[in-house]
Length: 405
Ligand SMILES: Cc1ncc(COP(=O)(O)O)c(C=O)c1O
Image (tube, rainbow, N blue to C red; front, side, top):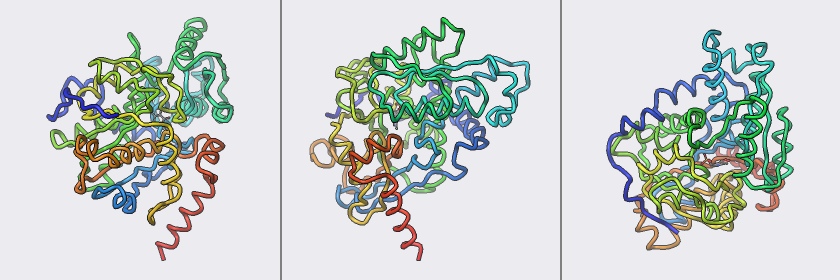
């Protein structure tokens, strides 16, 4: 399913939106994160997939591979640490805290009684736990019933205390808020709600680093279409706002892809305001299984996303396998359930002439996809792809070595 957003503007990036997200603050966040040892010192690879482009009938397909961002395995490593750092700077304005020293744990004596908490479906919680560990404060993570034990263990490995509830994601958000009120803890959430916008804004701003790297890596090359997967909308807002501010009215078309069961952004587009999902919110794409749009992200998305679309779980699994296989001589890529959603969306559109036409996709289109995660749940990955992430990575390395000869 695909819907066009008649409110999408083709104009300069508005000043009103600059007050939420802007390039200057994105670049500052990127500079701060360059001092964190959990982030790769190199930009993540921007990989060309000529085989996929020829097969699908577009001019080019490029994939920004965020599995290389961090040992945490996803782009989420860019969000929570920035929000946590900015929170601490706001709470202790008189301590002349140096961001570099902060992320390297050199202010930990100040933070012995400071606790942060968040609900998560996996990747955000892992990033917050890792950031809290590096900075030197306590972290509590609330998990809902559908988060796998594998993801729970990955978060606990970074020293977070885990609270498991029987309910769904939205209930875990409420539970975290209650625990914070009862204990004087600070919620560091990646989604906004009424009266709670500063921290999710900072999380989204951290994601701008992906767009900054893409601009440096692409040089003069201009993309016509960018596919962005949607959970609560933060990733899409962080990247789209940055590209929009840089490219102005020449910005690429943005297409947001969500699981059909977790269609909160699609429903928002239909309703003309931040809305809830209409489905069960249970998807193999765990990072995208979100029931409620972040209203702050929606302010950006409603102004620039040209199309919202829905995919099935099977579409994502097929895309994971396609990327892992390195079909048609492409480089094999490890892309997790949510990571492969962009390619899945492109394939759904290109396999239906009417949908492709509606999205303005044709043989001249230069498409950018963001593979937002690697195998963040390695067991789930191996089961779905039929091969372990290590085996896929090994084939990738062998291929690169052969190309280098
Ligand atoms: C791998 C992955 N991709 C995409 C998303 C979507 O991000 P957002 O919820 O900010 O829209 C998430 C969210 O957790 C994720 O983990």
